[in-house]
Image (cartoon, rainbow, N blue to C red):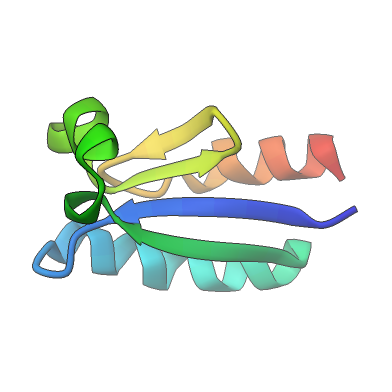
Length: 81
């Protein structure tokens, strides 16, 4: 089963870049793909997540925001494998 994660990000956001870097080895470990979306390119996403960015999603499930919560994300990914 493929695991598709979405990282809501901004190009000028250092927290967003940090989360993307921290997420890379975890995504590789679980064979997950990560799609990075610029929240500013979508008015609906910007309205919903504006101040929470970066946000890591699996479908509609919010896994974490601001910083990668590695233990929580690892537990979640192990549970859906």
